[in-house]
Length: 392
Ligand SMILES: [Zn+2]
Image 1 (spheres, rainbow, N blue to C red):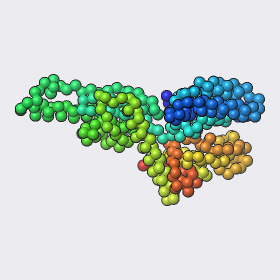
Image 2: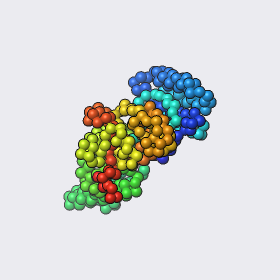
Image 3: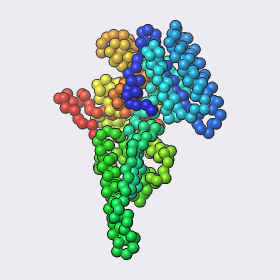
Image 4: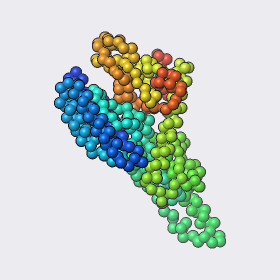
């Protein structure tokens, strides 16, 4: 499993381009499960690496790169029939070799040879992924799971044993009503304990969003015991029975709820950014303004159409990014270098600064707004007194 720190480290990586050093980023996307032969993917992965080896020869004397690609080729060969995605980041000149098993949602199998690591497939996958908690609850039991990507880990359980008096009451006559009340009361205590644990874990930062699995008949009562802050963070619920639900079922329900939530959130936040931009508020559109907002540290969330790409230049000295193709940096006057795709510089920057990234599909407003937009925490130019308007 990939941690945020690991991703940040990858985003901070930069090979020494002046010495002609390039890093290798390899992504393996398996065939859909209905294609059982798995021949296509294996052949395709090999071809892609072979092609990269040719490209490496074109980059001049580069023993390191060749060795890295040979090693990537071994990985590609071993992935025949592998049902999951794989990412490899390599640059032996800088002692880098990282391999990650990932959900099979990486787009295509591909190799990139660049001074920076190619993180776009990863950004698409991880950009807006919250730390997710899944709680499976009934009237006596609760199980808690941590979900990061499609990796799920149980984080303990709560079991409320019925007290002796409640369990031993007969279900007849006068005592029956008494016993039922007692059991109902104990269920309430249990839901309270579940609500309390969720609140504490949220405060500790153990999770950011919550999915609940419980039987429909218990939901109202459970919900009433959730702290308002916890309730705000519930992104969905599914019907499940604690005793019989399997890990795979939990994972697939949670994943479906999460994917829908991310898509909906991306769409509505992008719309918000575009509307704010029109009102000269907390939003900007178009590459030039987005780059400026990134440099002033105003960006909270970034929106890119799926295949967005644009040329730009980057200052070799101060790192200033410019949508105008100028040979001298406007900030410091040193030489710039061309970027075929400005995303290669934007994505690592966004990852390092914990900026949420969304790639909304078929978003016509975003298309019309120049295919790139950002939601801002504040507007530097409107806060000259030093006051910072809090982000809602
Ligand atoms: Zn500069």
